[in-house]
Image (tube, rainbow, N blue to C red; front, side):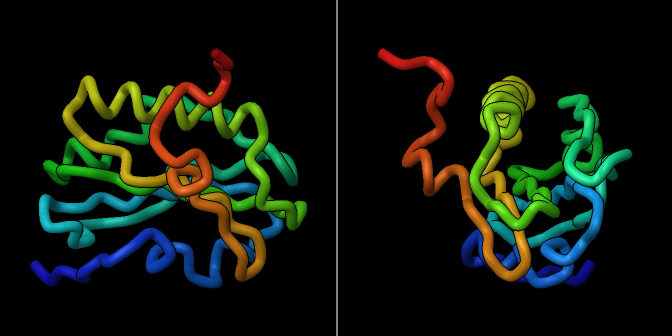
Length: 133
């Protein structure tokens, strides 16, 4: 099996997703050395700026691949890479599910054009972004 080394999240972003006309969610499965095992689209939105997500589907490929971790990425066709409240909520659920499944969520990227926002870097750590203390 050929592996691709992954040094950081922006290696995953690329130029392809930023130019899509509909929102898509992709995942990347990684081994314990952060090498890419597989990647692919999980969801494609039915409208320009939405996609309904079932968190279990995000981990289907990772479980099949016996992955140690994942990176998820989705595009915002609007051109605004700022996370929505729904993006933050889904990220929280993905991180929580990954902990239960022992598949670490390394990042959630929001891609627009050639610009991306990594939610882990933006939030600093994986915390509940919806609860204020």
